[in-house]
Image (cartoon, rainbow, N blue to C red; front, side):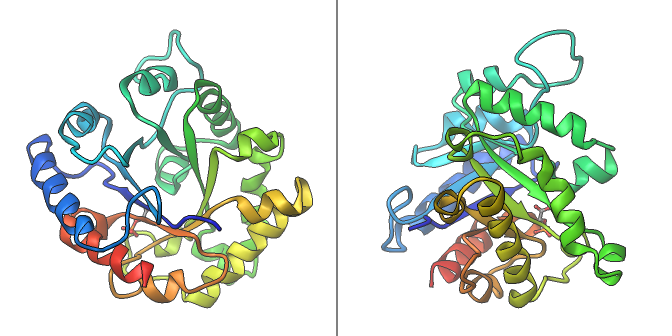
Length: 256
Ligand code: PGA
């Protein structure tokens, strides 16, 4: 019922000149999988903003969707260094990742800023991958769900229509880029918590429809066991998405 979604977060990696080869590699590998993108599963590529145009122009399979890694707090205005969500839509970008742990913890983006980014992105018509996740200290202190719940607060005011364009990504900070993946059980526990939060704050039928991705050292070796969890609907992938072959293997194993 919830279509699996695999999202590649390139972060600030790869060259523009790598884009064509990457797409060729990914497109040919997914074409040989016997399942089709959009019908059976979704693929979203989130390159740096500098690569978006090339990716949009080089893509041969339009079912592979493109995402930005961040977007502005308003549609236009005096916001030096920001990218307008409306212009991303104009370009053909359909998604944006918001609240990634690097935005929160390296660049200090607050809940207040994130809520503005979220509202502007939804107003522009983008679909949003909204990231939440605890640091290791919080997990050790048994505060994982408390942290996740406080981060989910930015989604409290969304209408059911807006929720249909939001995907939540649970990314424990201690698992991002560390090679230490959450166990499938740890992922499931957090995902189930997020789904029940949506059910409590919105509605049970809506909670059943919202996709919840896991992120944090996901790779071709663990995608199957993570995806086997009831509430894990997809993966948000950093390092293992930088190589088209590895990312395609992750998708293949994840789809089982
Ligand atoms: P990782 O990154 O797969 O390299 O851990 C995931 C992410 O930051 O989205």
